[in-house]
Image 1 (cartoon, protein in one colour):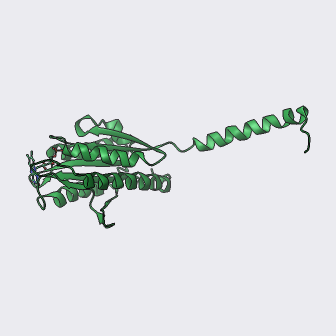
Image 2 (image 1 turned 90 degrees about the vertical axis):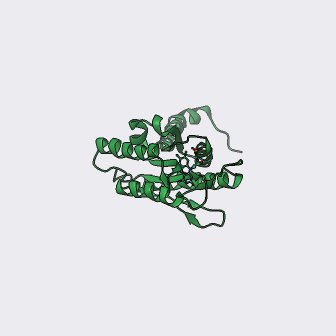
Image 3 (image 1 turned 45 degrees about the horizontal axis):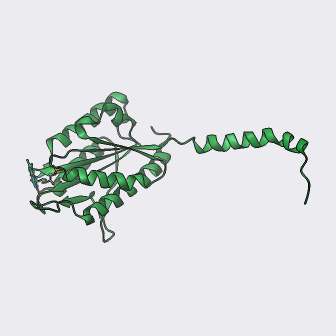
Length: 209
Ligand SMILES: Cc1cc2nc3c(=O)[nH]c(=O)nc-3n(C[C@H](O)[C@H](O)[C@H](O)COP(=O)(O)O)c2cc1C
């Protein structure tokens, strides 16, 4: 076995140190992708879905998640977000007024920050509704239309059969369980997908934003 002399080690040390520092700098070069999950919820159903979306997104490395009630999401939260997920209850066949107001604030905040709005950013929507076929499609499509008007790229959900969807949703009904285990699983799967695609899209769009 060759013997290593102390003098050799001390000669190599600066190089080893520089190499270690460079690797650490490269590893820390890409800041975490920031995902804002903003939701409106009167009775807790949409909030449960928001928590499941957060759990799914948190399973992806390199992502920082900000979970906020729509009223608490600040202009800074919006402008710093690489991806925005909006959760809404269906109210009178559409998204709630509070959720719509949040969309207005997204446009306002991004408009003030620059001319590119949602360019290079992802967006998505999920909802809960009291009964089937009573506004889930309309609520999600309305939010998607607003995000598209702001130049976001839309990420949909994936249901249990593997088909794409407008975004996760739950029919909560008048009785428990409200949001089912299957609904939460869909929401978690969507959260993971949203985080993964947001990371990829941010890397691809870096020169645009
Ligand atoms: C004012 C109001 C209007 C509603 N309108 C609808 C509706 O049009 N269609 C529907 O399926 N559910 C409707 N619901 C039921 C809610 O969408 C449902 O209970 C939802 O899960 C509530 O979510 P949250 O607990 O996060 O507030 C309505 C509820 C309220 C309070």
